[in-house]
Image (cartoon, rainbow, N blue to C red; front, top):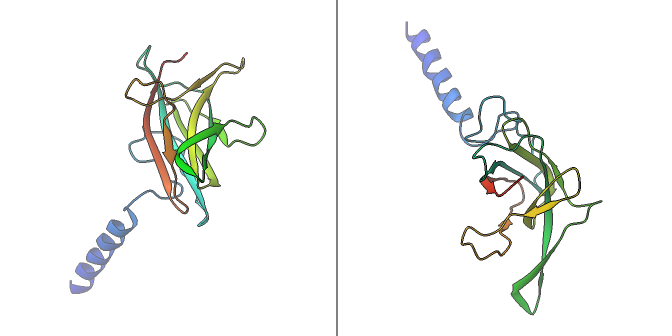
Length: 155
């Protein structure tokens, strides 16, 4: 009986330890069933995830192109910066059926999120303050950064 109790306790402890945080192969936290699983992130890279929701329909935007434009700041004034979307090199992907996106193993930098259509239209995700300024996300090496639910006036 003691052996069975010890095995049950050991299995419970293992299950509790393995369930903490985001894991490779598991969907992002808060993602709906069937969402894209998270890949393993290299120690010197980052992975970003999020979900795109249309403010017009209040529904997820499936099969939508998401791109990350790198932010560059001036050394003499780090409060000022510019972002650049390089169609050939900027990281990106598409949302799945639930509007979820995962962009894996990219350089850990600051990024602006841009939503694109197949016909070439782009929408820059802006601050929630209504200022019209681009929203900047910071990433960290070795981590998965969840951008959360991103609401855009699209399509």
